[in-house]
Image (cartoon, rainbow, N blue to C red; front, side, top):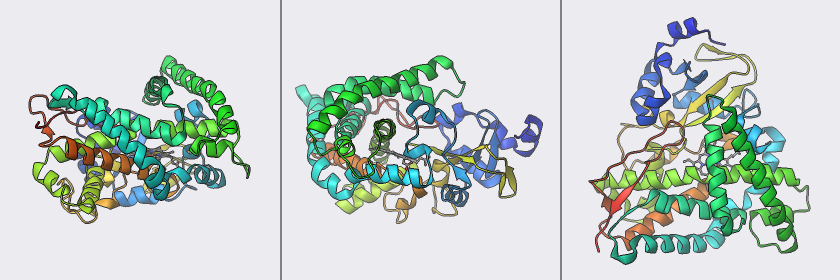
Length: 401
Ligand code: HEM
């Protein structure tokens, strides 16, 4: 462990890092760290921070040395699942859950229901001839919830309960101070999910519906156990809500704050896709991926002890000038925008990335079609906030009739 004195002496910039400052604007802090202390110890959370893209790639691609398979709140709360296992177990879990996220299945099964849901929500925003609305909680959040419930095959009537459980999970995971009540509430919510899931699985076994839970419960070749279905569906549910809500909100916010870039993005489907990659690079919804060192090791000559936690700061990697030219510039024509690490890399590359991209694409296209003159409301400004999940707390927009 890095003692306080040593830490202050050796990592003065790391010692000055405050989560509260990262929440407001992490990028100038990342720039300083990347330049002067690319491997640093942050006493506030007692973890290592990495900020250079190369170092982050090396760590995320070496699961033998830097693992997710270690005690953590997310494992404690949900049980072992694809994100907290490595090797054959993780590969088996991920393979079993992958099919509904393939582009072909998304194009056939998810696109129609997603488009219909986004149309319905945008119609609601415009109802009564309204020409202004809030699109984070009013659009991005319900789209993300609807999509992940649909892919899993959880009845949409459970939406409110899922939302409530989600809030408990999120508070338990952000509980760096170790408040036992928050931890217990998170675990209680996961247990409640497990109780609600059992009858859903029984029903799906009798009447398969072609969605993920149904595929898993009807699988007869090395099937996942009920506990494994519970834990892996929990991480999919957790992974698919706030992340995607934030990704959609950040994309809308980034494009509307740069009207010229917004115009460029609207020119063609390819321009739209590249602009979504640039929004992911420039303002990623998830800021870090954590790994536990499996043995004593070194990064750039800095000793990392077995068991210590290394945070790969994805938003810092995405603005590394060694890889991205003029990295703070938001440029929707940037040719290598798609090389961002916002969905991580390696074995734990985000399972839901294709769905999250599809949701963002459908939301933007629907807003463009239904809300001419879409722009930020200048009287009610907002900006992304948060050190782990980043998104605008509210996102007020206006449009013409
Ligand atoms: C439908 C939406 C989504 C679903 C269902 C989902 C689900 C998941 C799952 C299950 C994993 C674990 C994969 C594994 O360990 O093998 C994962 C990893 C990850 N996801 Fe997503 N995700 C979604 C959207 C997003 C979005 C929008 C972002 C950020 C822009 C994101 C960022 C990540 C990152 C960074 C990881 C890797 C974490 C790590 O390696 O420690 N996800 N996701």
